[in-house]
Image (cartoon, rainbow, N blue to C red; front, side):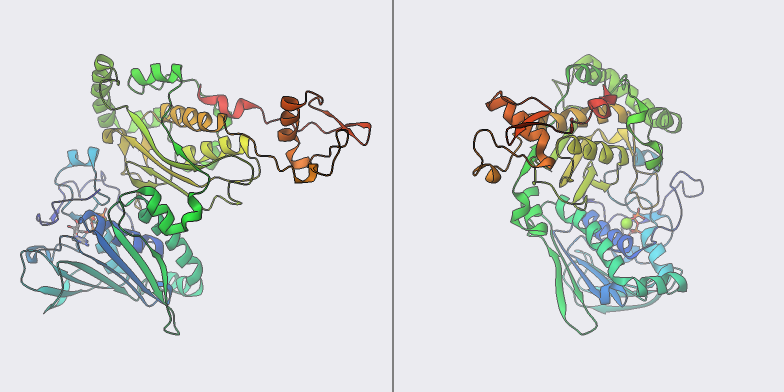
Length: 474
Ligand SMILES: Nc1ncnc2c1ncn2[C@@H]1O[C@H](COP(=O)(O)OP(=O)(O)OP(=O)(O)O)[C@@H](O)[C@H]1O
Ligand SMILES: [Mg+2]
């Protein structure tokens, strides 16, 4: 997701007068403020990013990088609304690969905080410290020393929105935690980038929040963020296409898949990602897609890259190998951290079919043709439109279900040591697992009758949940 044209002139994009790029206040929280600055550093090709906070971000947020830096002719355009170096015209938006493209984040931050940028481009002999006012105009410019790269410093966040500022001060730890989990998403997906975040508390004690090693392996990033133990019990997600899905995929994500809408609770989803709405609103994308479809039809994807590829890891569904909450789930589309609501819901539903009491760790990057993704949906870019999302859901369903299909259900048999052949008392929670285990190895028990103390006790039938939830996509 790096951008190599950072030295190119920052211009107001030509379409700012219309509503093509969704306007609005981009930065509404500490988490989004940090996210925007980190995204800018990644877009600038940084391999080292240092995030420093004071008092959980209430007193200071500073993001330093070793990216391209900014040339002097761009100092004044940098913080103006709708000014960006990442897009030059509307057509670029369809296949955008950089995190940023709106040219709004820095102007928003100027409006909300005191913003200073210290930057040095490789063509400059020295760095420059530039102070901006709330309108994004330069107040002061002084030469200073610095390696090539950029440091953005924010103080007094939300000073122009006193109610929000009070909220941040009051809930600083909660806001800080939200920021941390969003930052983790960038730490995990960024290969070859060393990201470090620290916080200095009021009592001047500095604590390290997270640090990655700049590895080129996602697993190393997972270990750096959550500790090596997190790697235990993780399964490699492999892209699987069921035969009927394969046909649909051959048709170029045709999406001719029957979906029972009940299985996905639509009220839980904030935006309608249905095929029709996508098609209605994204004619341009559809047109591009038509041409992709026809070229895929003629070539077959065996000859080219598959239209959807899943890359990542998920906890095994064996009992006890998941987490007690869905706190470690990271989703990406083309390496962009996002919240693909239906995909998230589907994966958790599948997992719970196999392990009803836990949630998986998920790190999943859905790699797609860029023109099938519209990133210009919400100001914070966390929601995306996926053209033909139903076919993508099919691939996800098939891949994840297949992964769990052959996982042996682990049964703790410690309690069984003291039990003779006729006295077996299974843990109620594990009765389904226990029953299938018993059927397989002793053929003595039926699904609902288990001999206990010589008596036949009718056990409540803990049937595996019906598969209907999972069957909507086929
Ligand atoms: N850390 C950085 N290093 C180099 N250039 C930067 C950096 N941060 C910002 N810039 C330059 O400033 C411009 C404006 O940044 P800003 O974040 O406001 O907009 P954007 O990244 O283009 O789009 P978006 O609003 O979607 O983030 C960028 O296009 C980029 O050229
Ligand atoms: Mg940006």
